[in-house]
Image (cartoon, rainbow, N blue to C red; front, side, top):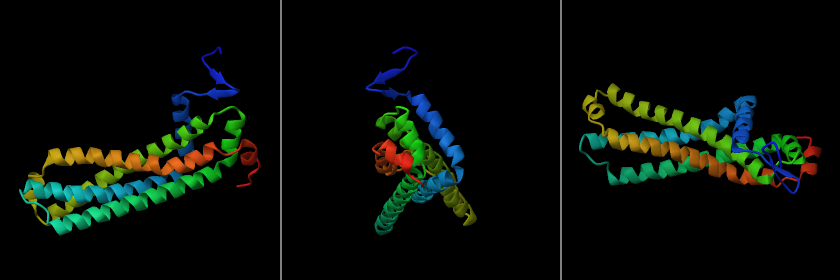
Length: 203
Protein backbone atom coordinates (compact mmCIF):
# COMPACT_ATOMS: atom_id res chain seq x y z
CA UNK A 1 0.00 0.00 0.00
CA UNK A 2 1.00 3.62 -0.44
CA UNK A 3 1.49 6.39 2.12
CA UNK A 4 3.78 4.17 4.20
CA UNK A 5 0.94 1.98 5.56
CA UNK A 6 1.07 -1.81 5.64
CA UNK A 7 -2.27 -3.59 5.24
CA UNK A 8 -3.05 -7.26 5.60
CA UNK A 9 -6.52 -8.79 5.34
CA UNK A 10 -8.17 -5.48 6.13
CA UNK A 11 -5.98 -4.82 9.14
CA UNK A 12 -3.56 -1.96 9.65
CA UNK A 13 -0.16 -2.36 11.33
CA UNK A 14 0.66 0.90 13.09
CA UNK A 15 4.29 1.69 14.00
CA UNK A 16 5.65 1.37 17.52
CA UNK A 17 5.94 5.16 17.75
CA UNK A 18 2.16 5.49 17.41
CA UNK A 19 1.60 2.90 20.15
CA UNK A 20 3.98 4.85 22.37
CA UNK A 21 2.10 8.11 21.79
CA UNK A 22 -1.29 6.52 22.46
CA UNK A 23 -0.02 4.88 25.66
CA UNK A 24 1.42 8.17 26.90
CA UNK A 25 -1.88 10.00 26.25
CA UNK A 26 -3.75 7.23 28.06
CA UNK A 27 -1.54 7.69 31.12
CA UNK A 28 -2.19 11.45 31.08
CA UNK A 29 -5.96 11.00 30.78
CA UNK A 30 -6.10 8.36 33.53
CA UNK A 31 -3.41 9.89 35.71
CA UNK A 32 -4.97 8.89 39.04
CA UNK A 33 -5.27 5.20 38.19
CA UNK A 34 -1.86 5.30 36.55
CA UNK A 35 -0.31 6.53 39.79
CA UNK A 36 -2.00 3.71 41.73
CA UNK A 37 -0.49 1.20 39.32
CA UNK A 38 2.94 2.84 39.60
CA UNK A 39 2.65 2.90 43.40
CA UNK A 40 2.49 -0.91 43.51
CA UNK A 41 5.84 -1.13 41.73
CA UNK A 42 7.23 1.75 43.77
CA UNK A 43 6.55 0.04 47.11
CA UNK A 44 7.91 -3.32 46.02
CA UNK A 45 11.12 -1.88 44.59
CA UNK A 46 11.57 0.48 47.56
CA UNK A 47 11.60 -2.50 49.91
CA UNK A 48 13.94 -4.41 47.61
CA UNK A 49 16.41 -1.51 47.46
CA UNK A 50 16.34 -1.04 51.25
CA UNK A 51 17.53 -4.63 51.63
CA UNK A 52 20.25 -4.25 49.01
CA UNK A 53 21.38 -0.90 50.43
CA UNK A 54 21.71 -2.46 53.88
CA UNK A 55 23.88 -5.19 52.37
CA UNK A 56 26.00 -2.58 50.56
CA UNK A 57 26.54 -0.74 53.86
CA UNK A 58 27.61 -3.95 55.58
CA UNK A 59 29.98 -4.80 52.73
CA UNK A 60 31.52 -1.35 53.11
CA UNK A 61 32.23 -2.20 56.73
CA UNK A 62 33.76 -5.53 55.64
CA UNK A 63 31.01 -7.48 57.41
CA UNK A 64 28.57 -9.99 56.03
CA UNK A 65 24.85 -10.04 56.92
CA UNK A 66 23.63 -12.80 59.24
CA UNK A 67 22.48 -15.77 57.15
CA UNK A 68 19.12 -16.09 58.91
CA UNK A 69 18.46 -12.36 58.54
CA UNK A 70 19.46 -12.47 54.88
CA UNK A 71 17.06 -15.36 54.20
CA UNK A 72 14.22 -13.57 55.97
CA UNK A 73 14.90 -10.39 54.03
CA UNK A 74 14.97 -12.31 50.74
CA UNK A 75 11.63 -13.93 51.54
CA UNK A 76 10.06 -10.58 52.39
CA UNK A 77 11.38 -9.08 49.15
CA UNK A 78 9.92 -11.93 47.10
CA UNK A 79 6.54 -11.59 48.80
CA UNK A 80 6.48 -7.81 48.35
CA UNK A 81 7.25 -8.18 44.64
CA UNK A 82 4.51 -10.79 44.25
CA UNK A 83 2.01 -8.49 45.98
CA UNK A 84 3.10 -5.67 43.67
CA UNK A 85 2.60 -7.90 40.63
CA UNK A 86 -0.91 -8.85 41.76
CA UNK A 87 -1.79 -5.20 42.37
CA UNK A 88 -0.47 -4.14 38.97
CA UNK A 89 -2.31 -6.97 37.22
CA UNK A 90 -5.56 -6.01 38.97
CA UNK A 91 -5.14 -2.37 37.95
CA UNK A 92 -4.52 -3.38 34.34
CA UNK A 93 -7.61 -5.61 34.34
CA UNK A 94 -9.63 -2.60 35.53
CA UNK A 95 -8.06 -0.47 32.82
CA UNK A 96 -9.13 -3.05 30.21
CA UNK A 97 -12.68 -3.08 31.56
CA UNK A 98 -12.92 0.73 31.53
CA UNK A 99 -11.68 0.89 27.94
CA UNK A 100 -13.86 -1.75 26.30
CA UNK A 101 -15.45 0.72 23.88
CA UNK A 102 -12.10 2.33 23.08
CA UNK A 103 -10.59 -1.07 22.31
CA UNK A 104 -13.61 -2.06 20.23
CA UNK A 105 -13.39 1.16 18.23
CA UNK A 106 -9.69 0.64 17.52
CA UNK A 107 -10.31 -2.92 16.35
CA UNK A 108 -13.22 -1.85 14.16
CA UNK A 109 -10.89 0.71 12.55
CA UNK A 110 -8.45 -2.08 11.73
CA UNK A 111 -6.07 -2.32 14.70
CA UNK A 112 -4.57 -5.80 14.92
CA UNK A 113 -4.48 -7.79 18.16
CA UNK A 114 -0.70 -7.32 18.44
CA UNK A 115 -1.11 -3.54 18.44
CA UNK A 116 -3.65 -3.67 21.29
CA UNK A 117 -1.26 -5.86 23.32
CA UNK A 118 1.56 -3.40 22.63
CA UNK A 119 -0.53 -0.51 23.98
CA UNK A 120 -1.07 -2.11 27.36
CA UNK A 121 2.44 -3.49 27.70
CA UNK A 122 4.02 -0.14 26.81
CA UNK A 123 1.74 1.67 29.25
CA UNK A 124 2.54 -0.79 32.03
CA UNK A 125 6.25 -0.65 31.24
CA UNK A 126 6.25 3.15 31.46
CA UNK A 127 4.47 3.09 34.82
CA UNK A 128 6.73 0.31 36.07
CA UNK A 129 9.82 2.29 35.09
CA UNK A 130 8.65 5.44 36.85
CA UNK A 131 7.55 3.52 39.94
CA UNK A 132 10.82 1.56 40.05
CA UNK A 133 13.01 4.68 39.83
CA UNK A 134 11.03 6.49 42.53
CA UNK A 135 10.92 3.40 44.73
CA UNK A 136 14.64 2.79 44.28
CA UNK A 137 15.54 6.35 45.27
CA UNK A 138 13.18 6.30 48.26
CA UNK A 139 14.44 2.91 49.48
CA UNK A 140 18.07 4.01 49.17
CA UNK A 141 17.51 7.32 50.97
CA UNK A 142 15.58 5.69 53.81
CA UNK A 143 18.48 3.37 54.67
CA UNK A 144 21.17 6.04 54.20
CA UNK A 145 19.31 8.66 56.28
CA UNK A 146 18.59 6.10 58.98
CA UNK A 147 22.30 5.24 59.11
CA UNK A 148 23.21 8.93 59.32
CA UNK A 149 20.69 9.40 62.13
CA UNK A 150 22.41 6.59 64.01
CA UNK A 151 25.74 8.36 63.31
CA UNK A 152 27.08 5.46 61.30
CA UNK A 153 29.12 7.77 59.09
CA UNK A 154 31.77 5.19 58.34
CA UNK A 155 29.17 2.82 56.94
CA UNK A 156 27.80 5.46 54.56
CA UNK A 157 31.23 6.71 53.46
CA UNK A 158 32.58 3.20 53.02
CA UNK A 159 29.52 1.85 51.22
CA UNK A 160 30.23 -0.54 48.37
CA UNK A 161 29.03 1.87 45.67
CA UNK A 162 29.83 -0.48 42.79
CA UNK A 163 27.60 -3.13 44.36
CA UNK A 164 24.87 -0.59 45.08
CA UNK A 165 24.95 0.94 41.60
CA UNK A 166 24.67 -2.39 39.79
CA UNK A 167 21.83 -3.57 42.01
CA UNK A 168 20.02 -0.25 41.73
CA UNK A 169 19.92 -0.70 37.94
CA UNK A 170 18.84 -4.31 38.44
CA UNK A 171 16.01 -3.17 40.73
CA UNK A 172 14.70 -0.80 38.04
CA UNK A 173 14.81 -3.58 35.44
CA UNK A 174 12.99 -5.90 37.83
CA UNK A 175 10.30 -3.25 38.38
CA UNK A 176 9.77 -2.82 34.65
CA UNK A 177 9.81 -6.58 34.08
CA UNK A 178 7.25 -7.28 36.80
CA UNK A 179 4.96 -4.53 35.46
CA UNK A 180 5.10 -5.86 31.91
CA UNK A 181 4.58 -9.49 32.96
CA UNK A 182 1.68 -8.51 35.23
CA UNK A 183 0.02 -6.68 32.33
CA UNK A 184 0.49 -9.53 29.85
CA UNK A 185 -2.69 -11.45 30.73
CA UNK A 186 -5.00 -8.39 30.74
CA UNK A 187 -3.37 -7.16 27.53
CA UNK A 188 -4.00 -10.51 25.84
CA UNK A 189 -7.59 -10.45 27.05
CA UNK A 190 -8.04 -6.99 25.57
CA UNK A 191 -6.60 -8.08 22.24
CA UNK A 192 -9.00 -11.03 21.97
CA UNK A 193 -12.05 -8.91 22.82
CA UNK A 194 -14.61 -9.08 19.96
CA UNK A 195 -15.16 -5.53 18.59
CA UNK A 196 -18.97 -5.84 18.54
CA UNK A 197 -19.10 -7.05 22.17
CA UNK A 198 -16.77 -4.24 23.26
CA UNK A 199 -18.88 -1.57 21.59
CA UNK A 200 -22.05 -2.91 23.25
CA UNK A 201 -20.46 -2.72 26.70
CA UNK A 202 -21.91 -0.19 29.16
CA UNK A 203 -18.87 -0.27 31.50
